[in-house]
Amino acid sequence: MSALLFSLIVGLLAACGLYLVLRRHSFDLVLGMTLLSYAVNLFIFAMGGLKIGATPIIHAAGSDYADPLPPALVLTAIVIGLAMTALLLALAIRQRQQQGDDRIDRDEDASC
View 1 (cartoon, rainbow, N blue to C red):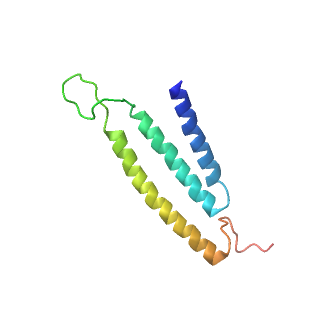
View 2 (cartoon, one colour):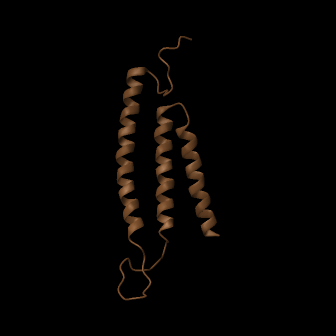
View 3 (cartoon, one colour):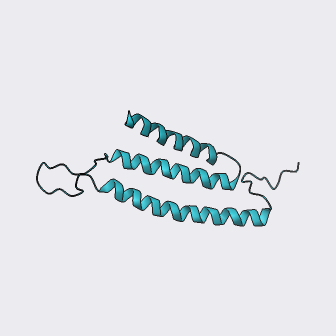
């Protein structure tokens, strides 16, 4: 039951992130990319196999251990995601200051 709930939460995060990425405003894009990165991080973490109380290093042959690679990958992805979010927010603020709004799909050549 908990695996089903976990997969539904990851799917909901990914769906909301994709919906926000497809919108026409830069702030929605930033939020969508952040939600997508959370969904991918949770997915990577779950694929590593969650083991509570297991040691992260093999002490003896055949002992139960937790794989240390997925948490290390997720930690690296969190740091990279934070830097990308800061960069995207800076670009969104700069665009809003220069253009007056935060629409992404503006067509300068079309006259309406």
